[in-house]
Image 1: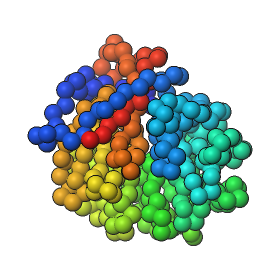
Image 2 (image 1 turned 60 degrees about the vertical axis):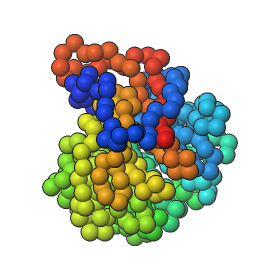
Image 3 (image 1 turned 135 degrees about the vertical axis):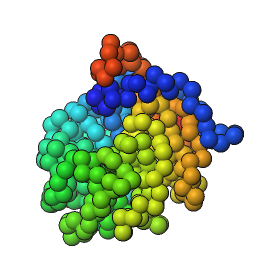
Length: 334
């Protein structure tokens, strides 16, 4: 994470004031809350049914109740945790633990840890597919997906893709999409047959794809790219429908079907809002430098992101030092 922040440092220093594209900005930062613990994090995930936000936080997962506005539980023992997959229909949650190369299984209703399963090297993104009741763990250093049957809580297979795997998204109809960052590629996986259906080359409009979200109704993908673009992809064909400018260090996207808007969060402290109809940028919101990942509450149309303060490094390109005690949850809404 710190290496990525170091790449952003020059642009971060210029990000104090970000003009919005719209004359009257609709979205803005509505709240900030400092949370306890180390300044380490990766993905966030929101549970619509419980209104709880799952924040990966170094060696544990914070569970933040958005109605009580506080951390109410945590999942311990998840060293190097990257992501959380939620299976509310089974009352189960799964974390990808990058340091131990394991997945922790827990009960959503009680937050009780139920066990662990092995993965291949450095599990990163993780997603639950309700169509097959399977969990797919993207192993960043192995170029594979570890497949878990969420009902039996057992590993049932591995899908070889190759390359450095990043975010995943499922359409709920039998397809999984995963970004392959070092190959500028989007892989399409059959979640029933556990086979690679297609590999789409994105290099004409998207370099180093990271963030990924989906509009399952139209099979459109919203891909965050390290060349300061968000690409809109036709998932079934791989056609690039649009490639629009976003901030530097984009590491997550989200799609709000109720508003037909897509969002891209970037480490330079910007949140780009894209029209799902015209593919035009309708607003750029100033969040906070290092706020690179996010989660969406689709009912309230609220975006959650996290960030931390840092010391200016001694020389360009040097790794910035994040300040202890500054881990901050940021809410963005209309």
